[in-house]
Length: 239
Image (cartoon, rainbow, N blue to C red):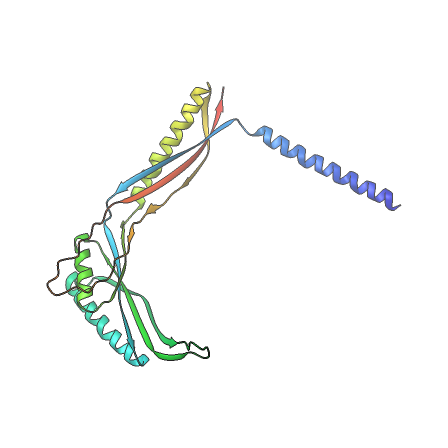
């Protein structure tokens, strides 16, 4: 009785697998003949916006002293930056922390607190790229001892991204047309289009150096931004 049930189960499973394989084969056979190509494009443009992260790090025996000293220096830096960029300057805090400093005994055991470190980082965003060097110098001259992550970017990358996508699509279509012509085939229609790509923003690390009152302005070159796009095109062909 058990052998009969087993045989029936195996037979049912075999019929099911044959049905699935048959459906898959039918699906493959229904796919139209096609060509798939990929086009890539790079559009190079000048940045029109910059972001600079500047901040103050202070250390003191107590957390209150570290916080107070930090606030005084940050306030002086913000006042000077707004004087340079205007009262409506785009400046915002992106990081703030107060943490204890520890000394670890060489022989092991519990570490002891030796003081506290307060850190306040603000991000300055400006569209006048000629003032980037002045922002760095002003921040340094007024107590900022951490200047980092100078980032050049675009106010609106969608226009340039669309241009890169158009160029990539044209290249993908040209490749498909070349292949079809070489094989004596005709392109009937587009079956699918898949796009990818993103702008590449140059980020520069700015090494901090305290500027003297009569020091030369910090030279900054914005360079260019590369906006990349890739389009994969699948077209139906016929003889």
